[in-house]
Length: 241
Image (cartoon, rainbow, N blue to C red; front, side, top):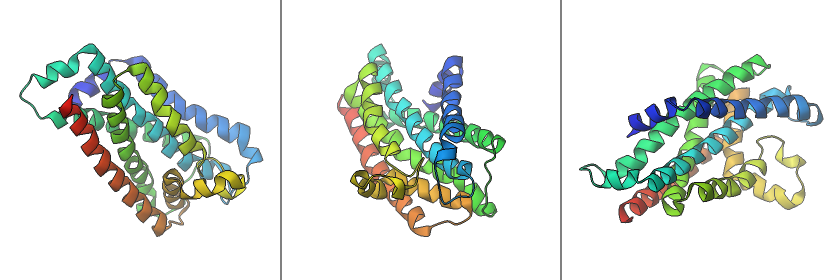
C-alpha cells in the first residue's frame, strides 16, 4: 500500500512541485519581509525561523493523508481493498508510510533552502542530526489525526477545510515565528502550553546547540500519546465502515 501511494505521488508532478514550493515561500517571506521587525533570542532571525517553519510545514503536509484517504473513499478504491485478503490496518498505515516519506523529502528541501539563505546548525553532530529527526517525529501524530479525519469525513473538499481550520491556530499561536513572550497576554498562556510550541522549542534548541531536555521529553510524550490514540481511532473507524 505504501508503494502504491508513492508511485501515485511520483506521477503527479504538480503535487511534488507545490509540496516543495510552500515551505520555500514561508522561509523567504518571513525572513526577508518580517525578519527585520522581529527580535528573538537567536543572533540571526533565520536561525530562529527555520525550526519553526520546518515543524509547521510537516504538520500542514500531514493533512494530505486525510485528503488522500477521503479521495480513495470517493473513488471506490477502499471498497476494492476491503474485498481483498489483506490487513485492514494496511490501507491506512500504507498511506501514512508514504506521506512520511514525502515529509522526509520536504524537510531535506527546507534545510537546503535554509542553508542557502544563511541558516546554520550550531550544535554538535548528534544535535544537528536530531534536528530533522525530531521534526519528522513531531509530524507522526498529525498523520494519524489526519487519517482519522479522512475516514470520518470522507469528503475531499470538507477534509481540506476541516484539516487546516484547527491546524492554523495551533501553528500560528506558537513560537514557530515569534517569541511567545512578545504575544498578547490573551493568547500567551495557550501558546506556552501548545504542543507545537514545545516541539518547535525542542527542534530550535537542538539547532542552536542549546537543547532543552524538558522540551525534548515532552515532545516525545505527547507525540507517542497522540499517535497511540489516533492510530487506534483511524483503524477502528476504517474497519467499521
